[in-house]
Amino acid sequence: MSLVLTFTVGAVCCIIAQLLIDLTALTPAKILVGYVCAGVALFALGIYEPLFEVAGCGISVPLFGFGAAMARGVREAVAESGAIGILTGGLSATAGGITAALFLGFFLSLFFRGREKRM
Amino acid sequence: MKQLTKNEKLEIIKRHTPKSKTLRNCILAGLIGGTICLVAELSRRLYLYLGVNKDDSTLLASLTIILLSGLATALGFFDRIGRHAGAGTLVPISGFSNSVVSGAIDSQSEGYISGVGIKIFSVAGPVILYATVSGVIYGLIIYIIGGISAVI
Image (cartoon, rainbow over all chains, first blue to last red; front, side):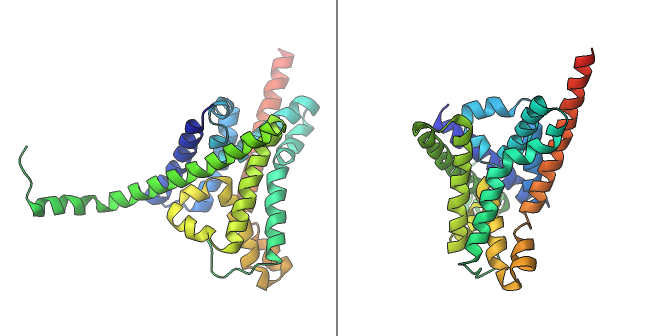
């Protein structure tokens, strides 16, 4: 795995989204949702894991990684505990990121006040 | 090839200006997005070096970006970078963190339940919902395929 590939894959993920923003009417929120669902699909099709082996965070830090973590959690939970894993696997595997972001957001809202409209 | 006059050159430049704005946006998005991934990867290697296992170090790298971009949002300079970076800060997990933190700190004047409690999910909600739905569909597919192949 090389850092050049990490940078390149991460850059390509962002450039595709930038082209979608500039050339289509898609809103940023729709693009994020699309990326997450695409992450599940990339994992299901067996494309994500080889990409992660060569690019590391270049593919896992863009939101594809969130969808892929969800899919991976589901696959492992189904393998381990059968049908119930369909319900428990996804959110368990992504709990770290979701909890960290939510807690951070709440915690910072105790101390900071938004000055202007963001996003 | 014939030499172009100054006016002809200017006309060509003018014709290509809107395109070059997209080009400029894409270059900035690529550079900044790539750099965020690079910072995450360097932190992941640090965690691996410190003895964290492969899965946890990947999560910790994402958490590092979540923390940094959350703080940058609260301190107000995420917007200044994001204005130029476009998709470069949106697509990495920094965009998710920015939406959660800005949703929370911009709405706390509306109260902690109906302000922060709701706005914190304004972008995270759809992202988590559709990731969960896609995950359940994927789970159903592999469960059914597993069942069929066990019978056969």
